Image (cartoon, rainbow, N blue to C red):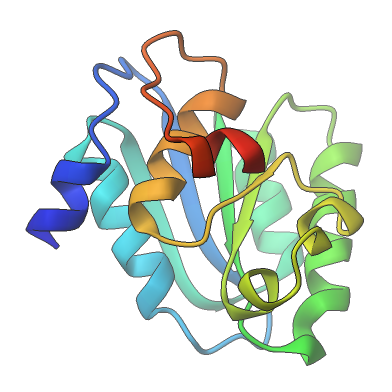
Length: 151
């Protein structure tokens, strides 16, 4: 994790809030846990909901808090419909929350993140920090060529 954190350095993010979640039914939380820890180490305020978080709960959380970036993890194809529904629900909430997705499904199928309506995609924890900063409009983003092509 120390090496991932060092690669992710993007500077100060002030009071930006990142919520990391695995959609309803998704049990693979290790990747999102790594993203959440890396985001926190880079100065983000982080709320990690863990595995199997219902869409209604996440939508309510986004509506109640000033969430700058929602990170969604999806490892299997059977949960893609839930990702789409979550993105749609967040968009319909009227909040300006930006959405970054990741997980095996998005790593294996380039461009899938656009089809579910996300604002960006990150293949790993260090890239997630840079992509989140970029979609949140932070000016001190030190993007790599890989992160720039995904956000």
